[in-house]
Length: 231
Length: 214
Image (cartoon, rainbow over all chains, first blue to last red; front, top):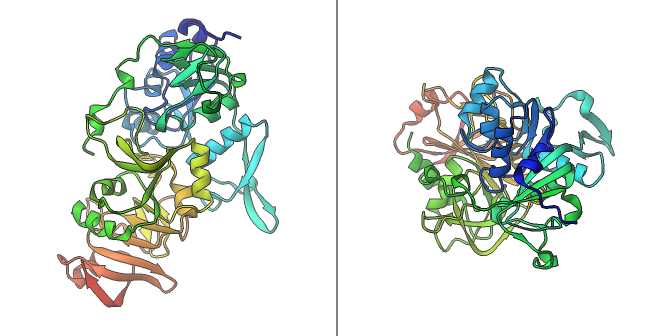
């Protein structure tokens, strides 16, 4: 039941060609240490699923700039000019979804179901006629569930069983992705002996988690970004 | 463009008791213009209901940003939740107003703000769900782009975010409401004449009988 692994061992489970969900909205919740290990191990032809592309030279943008990512399934990359440039040059394929629809596609996969019906974006270019059905007199879009081979997650606190707790706006996609991926790798700066997390405070129960990596310290990527003041 | 002119006018749309979402760019700048006694809950789609003012360097928490990447604070009654709950709140129509930016907006209330093909496509983010499901959608944007072209059009040319979703447009030069008859000019900036405004606007404007200046 002890799921603790070294960061090298945890990330070496990922083969080239894997699909990987990455928690985080901007910096909060982004598992920077797991991403940096993936950067140094160098797996390629990856498909990443993340709300955004972080910013240039930060988080998953490093994997993209390093040519390790073929495709990014995302909602918004407006804060990353480098990735927009790479998309325009055809160096990476981007697939955009409405943010809550992406969250719901992941949540549905995580709940063991296969899809849902929605009226979002049905008259726009993100919908093709083949995705529409008539349901109780209304035209609706069939949205399919989205799972992945792996999820990389940052938890504020975890225990050795893999119970997880997130902080403030770092929750975002993490609990959804932790349920939707086959193999869930978690990093945490606070790894506790089971029994030290209040059961009712746990966001992700341990059954969904495969491996837990303890971080000795958090590097500068986890800290305040000076350039985010005054805009 | 006079950003402060837009922000000063836009803040008047906000009143106590509302739940509102402020989009990336101009709308989130309103955080610094809100009166302290205004009891509004600001929803940030990354999972905050009741986000507070922008944080100072000393008070900033690396785990607490709004959807535009600004460090924010909490207030009495703040809650945090995951992205599926955040958009459940949005799609279920629990928000009273969304303020959002635009690349183009037209006299039918159609909005384009996610894709300029092969040039700048930031992506959809929360925009489609916010503008399709919020009761009142107010667009904040410059009246003309940096080349002088009108962003207020007869018909949007860029890929749409949603059809017929905009209630009001606030620019540095005018305040306009979408109505069944067309785009109604309700307020005009005190630094432009009506003739010049019409000249600088692609959309057909219906001038309100009660036209005010701002």
